[in-house]
Image 1 (cartoon, rainbow over the protein chains, first blue to last red):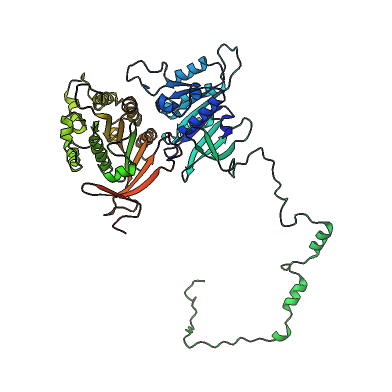
Image 2 (image 1 turned 60 degrees about the horizontal axis):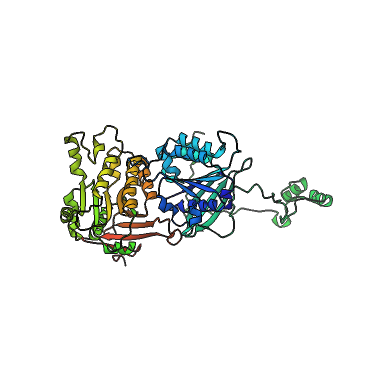
Amino acid sequence: MESVLALGGLVLLRDSVEWEGRSLLKALVKKSALCGEQVHILGCEVSEDEFREGFDSSINSRLIYHDLFRDPLSWSQTGEALPGGPLGALQAMCRTDPGPFTIALDSLSWLLLHLPCTAVCQELCALSHQHSRPGGSCPAEPVRVLGLLHEELHGPGPLGALSSLAQTEVTLSGAMGQASAHILLRRPRQRPAHQTQWFSIRPDFSLDLQGGPLLESQPHPDPHTPPVDPTAHVTFNLHLSKKEKEAKDSLTLPFQFSSEKQQVLLRPRPGQATSHIFYEPDAYDDLDQEDPDDDLDV
Amino acid sequence: MFPELNNLLNITPDRAEQGKLTLLCDAKTDGSFLVHHFLSFYLKANCKVCFVALIQSFSHYNIVGQKLGVSLTAARECGQLVFLEGLKSSVDVFFRAQAEPHPLQFLREADAGNLQPLYEFVREALKPVDDGQAAWRCPVLLVDDLSVLLSLGLGAVAVLDFIHYCRVAVCWERKGNIVALAHDSGDGEDKENDILLNGLSHQSHLILRAEGLATGFCRDVHGQLRILWRTPSQPTAQRDGSLTYQYKIQDKSVSFFAKGMSPAVL
C-alpha cells in the first residue's frame, strides 16, 4: 500500500457498492497530509463535515475543502456554487498552491456523469503530467491526484480512458468481511506490476495492513525479482557424459524391429508345432446360407 | 410498521437515526411493504413527512396505513404529512397556466430537463415552521418510487441530482432522513435504471433489497431481504454488515426468519 502514493500522477480508486472506497481515500488523504503536503479536496458527494469527520485537527488544518456538495448545479441561487464549475476549481487549485500537493476527487464518477469524458480526461492529464507554472519560474512540482471512481456507474469507454491515464489503479474487493485492494502500478519504462493487499481501516483512518506484505498474482511476475533457473532442482538428469551417451546408444529399445527379432517371432516354438481350431456351432446359432452382403452392390 | 423489521435494523420510533439515506430496492418481487413500513414508522416517530407518491393513490396508502395503525388523513390534516399524489397532480400540470410552478413540471416540457421544481416542493414542504404548532421531530422525505421517473422521460443523472439536492436539504441541513424505492430489473438490459440504482446505492447509508426467491413462487416464503449497511464512519465494525433474511408477508405484519428456517418447513 506504500507504493500507491509513491508514484504520483493519477491514482484511481475503483470501488463498488459492497466495498466502498471513501474510507481508503480518506486514509490516503491522511497519509499525504502527514507527509506535510497540502491536500485539496473536490467534494461532490459528501458534505465537508462528513469528510473531515475522524481526522484530528492537525490533519484537518492541511485539508482545503472545495465544496461542490451543497450546490453543484446552482439550483439554490445562494452564491455558494464554485465559480467556473468543477474543472475551473481544479485549475484554480494549481494556480494558487505553490508547494507539492495532493488533489482528492470525491468523486470522479460525479464529474464523469455531469461533464464530457474528454473534458475530464484532458483536465486530469493536464494536472498530473505537466504541472508547470505559466510564469515558468519554479520547476514543476509533483501533483498527485486521487480519484474515487464508482465502477458500476460507467461503461467500458470512460473506464478504459481513465485507466490509461492512471499511474496507479487500486481496485477494491473483499471476501468474508475483509477488504482487499488489487494494486496495479505503472512505473515509467517498466512492465506493470500487480499486487494484492488485505487491509482494514481504523476509525482514525489509518491503514491496518494484514497478512504477508504482498500476494503476487501469478500471471504478472514482478520485473525486479531475478529469474529463477527452473533446471536447478529437477529430479532427473538433463545432461549426459560421453560414457553414458555411448551406453544409451548401444541399447536396443524394445520396440525396435530387427531381422533377428523377426526370425525369433516366425520360428515355430516346440510346444506349438501344429494347432487346430475346433468349432462347434451352438444350438441357437442362426446359420444363414445366404450371403448377408448379397444386396450390396459391390 | 413491522416490529420484526425494526429489530433487524436495530431502530425504534423513539430513537431513529438522523441524516441517513435509505434505499429500498426490489428485484423480481414487490417491495412496497417496505414503503408502508417506513411511512407508518416515521409517522409514529412524530416526524414531519413529505411523501412523494407517484405509484398509488392517497386512499391506497391510507388503507394500508390504517392496517398498520396510522391514519394518513389525520396526519395530513394536522400538517404532519405533506402528500404529493402523482397520479392526480400529473393531470393538473396540463390544465394550469404555464407560468405557475408545479412540482411535476417536467411532464410538460418537451425535453425533460431536471427535477428542480420537485426539489423546491420538497424543500418548501419540509421547511421548519414556527407557528406555535406541535414541533415535529426531524423531517423525512419518502419517495415511491424513483424508477417511474425514468419511465416518464427523465435521465438517471437528473434523478440522481434530485436526490443529491434532497440529501443536502433534508439529511445535511435539517438532519432528517430520506427513504426512496427503486426497482431493479435484474437483467442489466436497462442501462439507465442500472445507473440510477448504482448511483443511489453509492449515496445511501443503508440498502434494503427485497428479492424474489430464485426457486420461484412459494406460499410460505415470499422472498428474501438483504440488508447492507454502508456507513463509512464505522469501516471495520460493521464491515460484515450484509445480512439476508427470508420473509413472509401477513395481513398486518411481516415475519422474518433466517434462510431456510421458515416455520412451514421446520
